[in-house]
Length: 152
Image 1 (cartoon, rainbow, N blue to C red):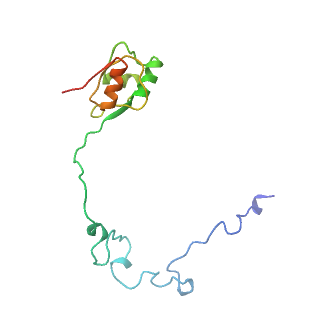
Image 2 (cartoon, rainbow, N blue to C red):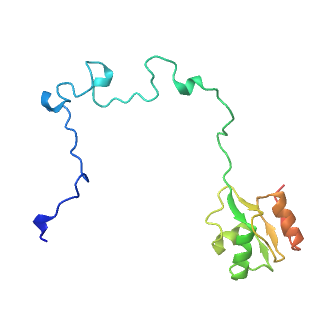
């Protein structure tokens, strides 16, 4: 086989429809855009416009509430915290603060604080100081003999 004998499989490629290239193309003269008006011009996209009918996004009821400036917390799970303690990346004997978590690489950045969640299991006795924690996480840490300090 030579380079000049290479061909695509039958039906693998499709010729592009050449719009506005004469009456024989089937899409000649106005190129399927109709006559005059905003939508026959180039550079126009009327998103959500339904020809004067009330658009769907306005007909549907509005629900819920979106905060303007929600807090974003860095999240850590108990299981991953235990992994880092086992790998000696975090010293369980010292107090574990948010800065310690960042230095160890468990959390990339603090954002608006670090929140502790209860996924996984904690076996080490640790003293944690974080911005937030779920009730289940606090219970799990206390069950392992540790403590969680949260800001007031």
